[in-house]
Image (cartoon, rainbow, N blue to C red; front, side, top):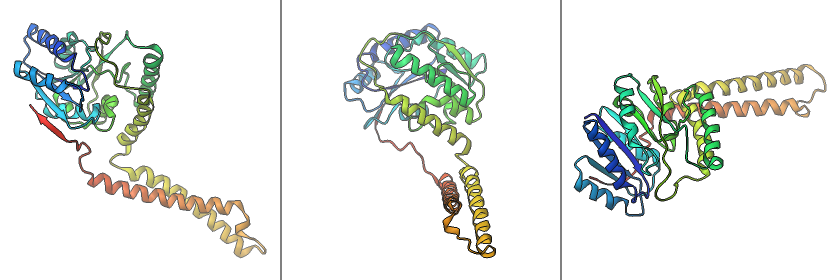
Amino acid sequence: MDISVVIPLYNEEESLPELLQWINKVMKTHKYTYEVIFVDDGSNDGSWGVINRLKAEHACVKGVKFRRNYGKSAALNKGFELASGNVVITMDADLQDSPDEIPGLYRMIVEDGYDLVSGWKKKRHDSKVTKNLPSKLYNATTRKISGIKLHDMNCGLKSYRREVVKSIEVYGEMHRYIPVIAKWAGFNKIGEKVVEHQKRKYGVTKFGWERFINGFLDLISIMFVSRFGKKPMHLFGALGSVLFLFGFVVAAYLAYAKIFMAGYKMTDRPLFYFGLLAMVLGTQLFLAGFLGELISRSSSDRNHYLVEEII
């Protein structure tokens, strides 16, 4: 199969028939073999009923329904698990991502040899205050920290070589950082393509202001995990050892002064409390690193979400 299109959705019943019709038109024009995987992330409208109807009418359609809303990352991860195409395309279900971009994204993977290609919504039809400016700040920060030169890290329209989606795990709210996760997994040829951004036709956005706070926290998490996820002792153990050593040297100096200097009182010196604090914190950090090593070596799958139905 040439292409698997993975579409996570939450309460998008109005847009699904039109989106599938658009995808079918593009695929048939270019004679691709394909499948469309709708992942219903616990919608409480009629989205699952629409997916069932589309499945009955089109053999290319697959559907997954979660029992509740787990988030976009869980939906993408399940879609990646089910995808069987040589190239995997992801897009949002709200018709703001254009299926007309699929051929270009596909060619960049197959012909140009990219592992991952991210869309860049150079001209956006969103609010400048609530989306455009925060998005630019977020992307600039991510580029600086990760070293990946993408203008629109969180664009839902992306294409992947099949090996990429089968090698990575997307959990929590890490869908914003899939390029970072892919680079961490060893897929370094990451490209970008300017894509057309459509105005929302149905419904309202499902993301609020909290996504900016969560995005910043997730960036810190992904950078930590990418560097120390498999070796937490290298960070916590090193910091703990340095702090403990500092506290020990202070304690040794104060003990020497207590023994050999008449009238010297250790507890009257602020340095005594700094040294004691350093030793306690150093011990705690060292133990945190040790426990982190145990957890990292025995952690189970983080994507334990309940699937109600697969069609």
